[in-house]
Structure formats: C-alpha cells, structure tokens
Image (cartoon, rainbow over all chains, first blue to last red; front, top):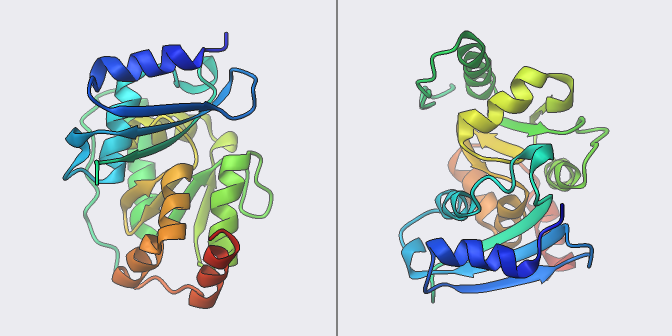
Amino acid sequence: MPMQAQEIEDLIRESFPDAQITITDLAGDGNHYSAEVIDASFAGMNRVQQHRAVTKALKGKMDGSHGELHALALTTKAPA
Amino acid sequence: MPRATTVRTTRKTADMSNANDRISETITSNDVVLYMKGTKSMPQCGFSSRVAGVLNYMGVDFADVNVLADEEIRQGIKDFSDWPTIPQLYVKGEFVGGCDIITEMTLSGELDTLFDDNGVTYDKDAADKIREANG
C-alpha cells in the first residue's frame, strides 16, 4: 500500500513540529520518496542519530518488506 | 589492531545473541565491512550496489556480507545497529551509515577523512574523480 507524500510529511511533522520538511516523489509511483528534514534539534547530533530520529518518527513504516514505505532517501541537517 | 569498541545490545534470546556475537566478531576482525544485498562483485539491490561501487572504485579493501544468504544476519544487523535498512557500512567496528549517508559523506569528503583517521587505505584520486563527476 503506497503512501502519499503528505502522510509522510505529517508523520515527520508530529515529531518535528518546527522542521523544514521537503518530500519528493522520486519515481511518481508513491513508493520511492526523498525527504529533506532541517530541524534545530539536529544540532549536535551526527547523521546516524539524526536519521534514527526521523526513522523513529515514521513509526515502523519503513520496516523491511512489510513496510508501507519502500524507499525513502533521507537528508537531514540542522539549520545553517 | 581491532579496537574493542563495539557496544553490545542486551537482548536475551539465544538467536539474537548469536547474531550479535557473529556481527561483533565480523566488524572487529575486519577494518571495513559492508552488510549488503548480494556481494561486492554482484550486488542485488541498487542501494547496496551504490555503496559497494564507491568502495570498489576508491580501492578500499572491505569485507562484504550478503544478508540475502543469511536470514539471521539479515534481521540481526538491523537490531544490532537500530537501523532499518541495508546496506550498512562499518569502519573499525563502528556503524557509519547507510546508502544516503555514505553518498553524502563521499561527496563532501568526510568519508576520506574517516578513512584517514582510521588508517584505511584508499585511492584519493579516485575519490576526487567521484566528486568531480557529481559536483
């Protein structure tokens, strides 16, 4: 079951209310997205920690072959 | 040689601890390890292929673990690192990241720095070529 870009943004938004979030449907198939998340809470975290925080926000949607979200290319950073 | 910096998780089931033990052993006895789908000479997933391709091109001597050939490791590596996807790159026993992070670090030069800091040999010119081609 593919996900809509808005659903992905909403899920991330729940955990990062003030973040700048950009979702792009890479293939136009509702299955391959990229997400850029820029949030102040990322300051002082390394990329692995930042990605884990976003993955946690997605609440298991990315879990393996049963996940609703097949591919999400993630870019995270703290505001410049 | 290998540093004993691996943090073991505290899961109790026999299978889980066996997978963790095997992963700990692998990543401490090899400086650079890529857990991937397929092998470095025949990747079976685009994301695994991209990271293996970068390491191959940069001439990095790395161990590849094909998770498709080992169900215990396929799930175990995700629990080990608390990271939901494959590929996963480890340098000197430490989890570095997956496809997106390795791509970003390659282009920014941070991967070179990580290899320099850990005494991993690689072809600096090749790394520069990747950046030129993607600049």
